[in-house]
Image 1 (cartoon, rainbow, N blue to C red):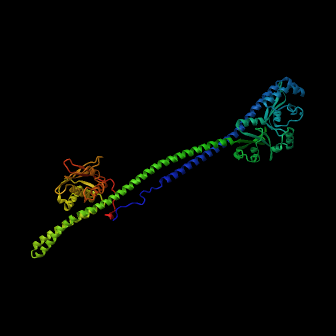
Image 2 (cartoon, one colour):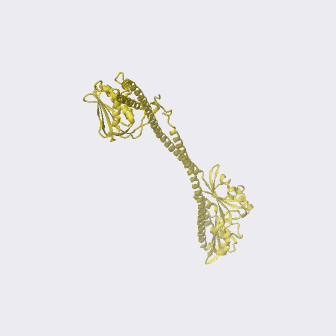
Length: 598
């Protein structure tokens, strides 16, 4: 006979927290990586967009500076044209007098306004005086700006390439005096200072490189030697570096010239000194002819270092926040898991208690069966003795049919009584099953009283108080009948020989408002002591030497299976009262015990 069951995983808990935390850690890592990658991509695009805007700004700002310088030159020419002395010296081709008259003004222009060239040229484009090179004169000036001004009689300006490969911003203005055009005045500014101003304003480095086929390399090298400057390291394939915005050519930038000249796309290159953004723009002279390229560099190392610093801080902050979320979630899950373990352990204990109660029920049933064996034998022996005697009498009265039929009727009645008694005992053995159904509680009480009267009830008097109308509740009739039988037996044992036991049934609502019924069994015995009252429903606790201490524990277990309550109290007039309350319906059917253990 199985006395209890226990699952092998009663206290084992699934690794829920480990699985959840692993997925949470993966999610946090994914979010941090996605955040870093997104910021990095945005930074790259922003950096490229900023440099593209800087490239466009270089062209715009350089054009503005050229316009400003051109305006200054034309204003200077206008001031020169008003001087009668200078005009007379020019018309007389008196070079010494012209030089002495214009010399102080040219020194001021060169010192304060970076004017490097001043030409006085006739309308036939033959040079009369170069203020920056007084010894050179009498040659034909065949530049585009000079030809345009001479032919159109209107000012002409633009960047032009000199014979020594220098790029100069030139402004040629027709010289009018006393209503007549007497010559051409040309002012020039080398492009280097303009590049320096533009690069400083936009935070970039600018390099002007011209094509070899636009100048004579021999003359260009000669010019570099005459000025005391090296030429070899400024030649890059078919281009020559002629001007730049910074005093020196940076090695990292110079190393990119050969590749940059053949690929003008805007891009960022990683160098040993850090990232460099590079681009090129076409360089055109006053006639619109492409004479070279303007290389544009932006050092991104400081911006990259700043971005890396803040990116590391943001990543660390994200990781710290993720770690805080992870550990907070871990603590919350630990609490949930602890609560789950407590609940699981409680369920395990309840399952153990339930199994123990089933074992107690079986033990109590066997004990009660042993107690009633004598009474059962007596109940079955008396009818069987009568059956045997009446059968013998029937054999001797075969000639008296009426007498035989009478005795056979008594035999049948005795057999029916024995059969009914045996049926009640068989129902009693099914106490470990739970099969609830709508049942009239009065019928259950009557069945329990009948079994009680046939077994031990003749020593006491029974008072039955039941309602006239059916008292229907959803219960297990076998279990509930067993509980009432135990209450009656307990009351009979308490009241002793010749005592009185009262059983009643009445409708009663629970304190929480649920409708139900209350069975009350009262006796006129000595009552229950305080110590016994505290331990009344404890298994194996008894005040009788021959008792098992299981009867009331079984009653409490059966009542709890029905979601009811059981209690005991002493009566004022003497004796004890035990009452069990049952709801009209059980909300959830309890777990059915194993019938094989019955």
